[in-house]
Image (cartoon, rainbow, N blue to C red; front, side, top):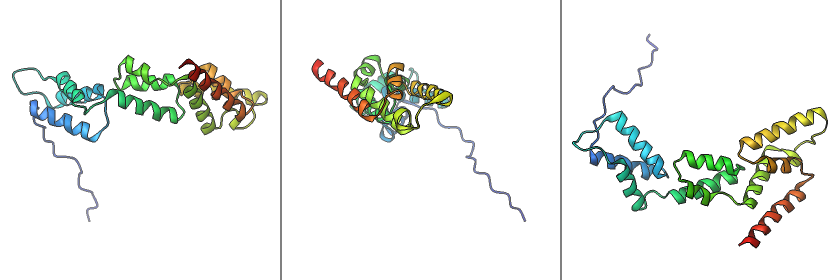
Length: 195
């Protein structure tokens, strides 16, 4: 009795080369399925062109197609960046990590700067991460030699999450939640005064 399974590989068909209409159809399907940025859409279309090749006398207008999709409102870099920054901040990530994520998605510097969290929001994100990971006042006391090693690991984890050292240290060395709540409120009142 043969217990071998049939192969699940696709037939080795080669995909048809792309023309202008097929490239536009691919772009439309991509933006319909994914919330994306102009940079990511351009990368996707260029990858498809490498995989499938191009038929036609003139060169493919990837940048023009992406610009058309932006103009028509199918791709909104600023909206995507705001949503992504808010999502990462709510998960406890810091300014640097948020900026790196937006840069990797092809978001321009002016939009990245416009969506960067303010001081109050950055402090809240640091506290949110510490609470979630049970760092500083949310975990076991950091006493003795073992506590010093845990403190260093906590500082390193907060730095990897994109928080600057001053925020990480302030949160981890804080005596309690009330102190951190006052620290956040102080930054928010400073921001309100600056407006």
